[in-house]
Length: 145
Image (cartoon, rainbow, N blue to C red; front, side, top):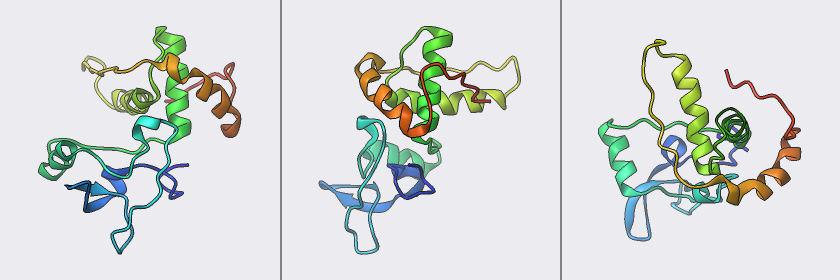
């Protein structure tokens, strides 16, 4: 799964403007406006659209959005759980991955703030089942950088 495979939910990086449920936003849809199937390891991100506030911020250039793969989210989940003792939700794990990559490109004295929402304990069974699909296990060392 990932943006290069077509199996993703990256509405803000691969979506196009459209209307769903009465809201104009960025959608994963075909050339005829039919909604495409989505995929994300995170149930909270597995949706073909995005809230209109995010779409508006993207259009204004006030926010940037990136795609993170399921594997990358799992790596971030494992790293944050081990190093910080915080079990992030899978939704947040996507942001953790990108934040780690972003922080590595900034000056050492630059502060970085990440809002960690949700709880990952609800995701541990799903994560345990997903790891073998990515040839990963809980004992793996994770090096995102």
